[in-house]
Image (cartoon, rainbow, N blue to C red; front, side):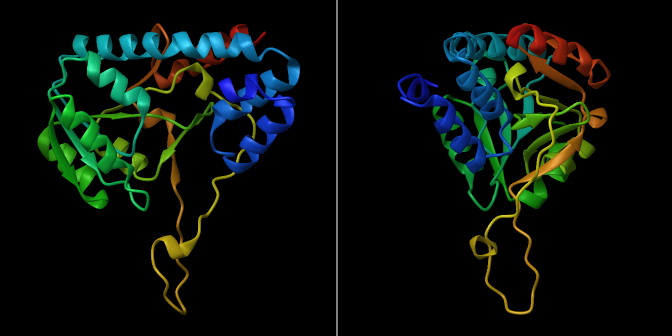
Length: 233
């Protein structure tokens, strides 16, 4: 946001960012604000929202007496929440092909958490076996789906899972989950290799959705969209 605020043409620059990362709903809101001249207002909210979101998430985990969570990839919302929480043990999957989960493991290890790193396919079963609660971030939340790093859906099917998106991850417009370069995974002739960074998790399999100052059940998602409309109005 700071870069766009200093740009001579923030609308065009924001459009280029959105084209490069269409799965990130916050860039859609950023583009709309940049093109309508309300970028500073959105920047002000976003700066304050990080702390508020972390507090709300940490309080929820405390109220639920959660000491062990399972997560994947690298989410600043999840990391900030955990730093404020009473959680002591974290199970993390590698999150291939980018291995963002390893970076999360390093960050949380330095914060004093007891860390268990597992291979991607093992996370759902290992989380259930360990009695962990799922805690994940979000790249987009629609009225029906959570779009997040691939592996979120099987985790949410295996254990009670909370997501920490924040209001700016809400987006109701159409989107596409792009296929990425197969060569990031392997190069095999005669094999159709699918490399996708994200999957869709139906909201109704989630336990809670956390926003700045409040949390809801999936059935209450309309309340969050109304809050967003008020923010962006």
